[in-house]
Image (cartoon, rainbow over all chains, first blue to last red; front, side):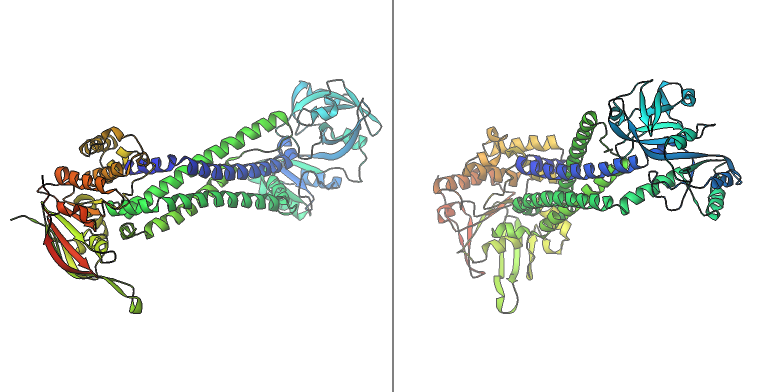
Length: 378
Length: 234
C-alpha cells in the first residue's frame, strides 16, 4: 500500500497549481477559523479577568449578576450570614467598581478599582515592585502592570493622582494573570478606602469571597446562600456564567459563529471545488488504473490519502500562520485579546476533517462510478 | 498444437432497454492462441472495443462465456477479476492514459506497485522495461515531454511490466503517423511477442495487417470472417 500512496502523493504534489490552490483554500479557512475562535476565546478569557485574578474558590453574588463587571452590591447582613454558614472557613467582601482618575498631566482616565478586605487582603495580586503592606499607607493604591498600564502615564511608586477629589498614591506595581476586557487600567486598594473614595450606593459589597472548609462543603454553602436569595458560584461556574452571557446574550457569539461558518464555507468551496477538478482531470487515469487491475478500495485509499494529506498540511499552515499573526499582534498591541486554546485547535481540526471528508466523498463517488470500459470507449 | 489463450463462446452484450436497446456484440465465438498476434478488425461501431472489454474482464457480457487459460473469467468475483487483469492482461490504450504528473519510469512501474512490489524494486524493473522498448534515457521525463511514438512505447512498457500472458492493444496506430505506427507494431512483433504470449489488437488500420497471424473481421456486432494475416516480407 505504501507504493500506491506514494503514487497518490506524487500525483497530488506534482500538480503544483492545484496543490497550491488546495493548500491556500484550507490554510485560509483554518487561519480564519482559528483567528475568529481565538479572538472569541481571548475575549471570554478577559471577561473573567477579575475572577481569575482574585482566585477565590466560591463567589457569592446577586442572582442577576452575569459578569464580574456588572456587579450588584449586596447588603452587609449577607456577609454576616455567609460567615455564619456551616462549611464556610472564612468570607470577605470584595469591592468592584469603576472610577475616574485625574492624572498629573490633567488627563482623566477611567479605571477599575478593586477593594480588598482590609484585614486579610484576600485576592491580593503578586507584586512586581513595592510591598503589599504599603497598601495600608495613606491614599495607597496598587496599579496593575498590564496592557492598559500606559494609559496611566506609566506610573511609578510614588506617582500620585486624583480620584474623586481624593489624592491617590501608587505604592506597588502588580502583575496579574490576565488583563481585563474593556481596556481600562486596574487599581487595587483596601475595601474601606475604596468605598470611602468612590461614590457608592447604599450597599457596597460587590461580591463575597468564600473559602470553604473543604470541597465537600461547597454544595452545602451554595444551598444555604440560595435560601438567602443570593447565588454562590465556584470560580469555574462563574467563568462559565460570564462566558455564557457573552456568547448568548451579547450577539458576540452569534457574530463569531457566523464568521466561523463563513470561513468554513469559503475553505470548503475552494478546496472542494479544486479537489473535484483535480479528480475530474485524473478521472480517466483512475479508470485506466482500474482497467490495469487496481481495486476500488485502493483507489479510495489514494483519494482519502490525498485529501487527508492536503487537509493536514493546510491545517498546519493555517495554525502556524494564525500563531505568527497573533504573536506579532501581541508584540505590537499588548491589549490584543486573541489566544489559541486546545479547544480552538480541536474545533479547527474537526472542521478540516469535515472539509476533507466532503471533498474526498465527491472524489470517491466519481472514481467509483467510472468504468474501465469508458476508458476503452474513449 | 499451440495452447489456447482466450476462448470466447457465444458472447453477447447489449446496452439500453426497449427501443433504445443496442446489441454491440452478438453471439461472438472465437479462440486465440499463445504465440499468436490476433487482430480484430472492423468499421467503427462494429463492436470491436466492446468485445475487447468482454474478453479482458472489464465488461460483463449478457450471455456467453470467456475462458482464459481454461478458466471462466466471468465466474470470478470483482477482486479476482482485478487480480486477473493485473496479472494476466496488459493493456495499451488508444490514448495511452499515462499519468502526466508522474515520470515515465513511475508510469511503467504502476502495475508492479499495484502488485505490492517495493518502490525501489519497481523502479529498477521499470527501467529494465524502458530499456526493452528503447527509451530508458527518457525515464526521468514526464510523458508529456515525449513524442507520440515514445508515449506509445511507454504504454507498451507499462503493459508488459506485469509480465502478462495476454496483451491487448486498442487501436495502437490511431494516434501515430503511418511510419511510426508500422515501426511500433514491428517492434512489438519482434521484441514483445513470444510463444507464451497472445497479443490481441483492435484496429482498422490496414497498413499493419501484414503483422497479424489471424484477422477476425466484425460488422454489426457479429463475426463476418476470420482470415490469415498477411506475411511480412523480411
